[in-house]
Image (cartoon, rainbow, N blue to C red; front, side, top):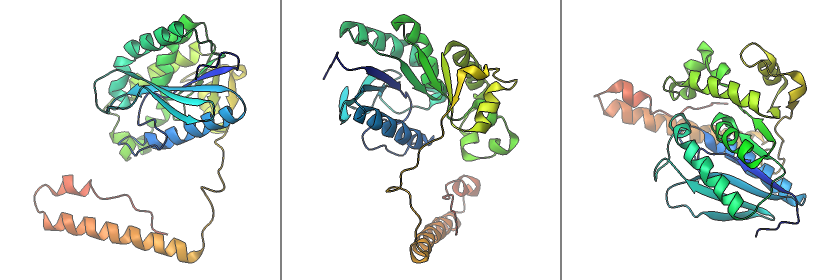
Length: 262
């Protein structure tokens, strides 16, 4: 398992369910996890040994083989249950200490550490210097964008619990510390260069997310109609449940699914 001849990479995503089959989570982390695990699989297929480091909770195993040359490695922190990233960051100092001990004990030598989102970026800013590793930071979604009034009204905006400023502060520190910052769009690259982050353009690389044809493809009208019909039925059932429960209508309404009628 610990092949020291092949080049080894460390990918870090600390929040959400990082498993071979990503599970939905209350903060939408499953989408980012899918991105990271697909990236790890492709790097493994190219001959790199990839360790995907994350948080351990809910009785998950310490090691989970993912694909050829790829292993998920978990370290506990912050208790036994799933917690939001806005709380998780307070426990990432202890998490980083475990990673450093793990790498030194096994004499693992990584080419670099690649962190994803600000919480993992913060964790990797703590361990990169101790392991003498170049740090590549991919913010995915910037905190400065979440300060937009339009975003503040969305579901994700309501989940921030007033911690957007904390996110931006950490992003600024991580961007200053990292050797490279990966933007996922040209617009995000401009945001990184702008007054909120002031990242030197030479430090930024823009790499758009890939596209998986077998997973995402155009459907015919009948399939779209069937999918929309299912969504409509779910919305109707949820609305009926709200109308049958007169108390606390406001709370019940927030349980309604977000539907996208075609």
